[in-house]
Image (cartoon, rainbow, N blue to C red):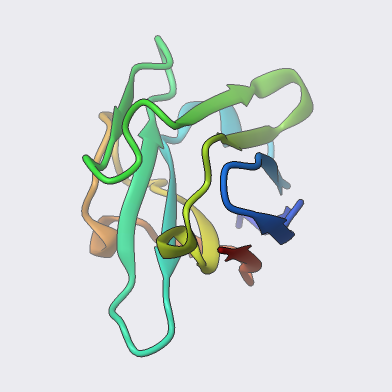
Amino acid sequence: QVQLVESGGGLVQAGGSLRLSCAASGRTFSFYPMGWFRQAPGKEREFAAAIGWRYSSTYYADSVKGRFTISRDNAKNTVYLQMNSLKPEDTAVYYCAAASGKRTITIRAYEYDYWGQGTQVTVSS
């Protein structure tokens, strides 16, 4: 079992920055690819960023590439999402997720089997 708890969300002005954290329980956390997804009001959940477990390879949605950075600290069982140059369209609930059945990075939500409760990010114009 893996439990994920996000933190770091909040209200920020356009152009500002936030860093989200996702604390994971479980001894095997370091072996799981991890991802960040987001869901805006009235929209479907969408992929934002993912990171592999072994070499920490990363992948980003086009909408956040160059502005967001995903990273992980396996010693602290934590994944981060550094968000810079935030835009009002980044407003959403952000979820971290773990893909315990995968050995490679994935952007598909259905391949993630553990999810956090989400943290709200609101970007004002």
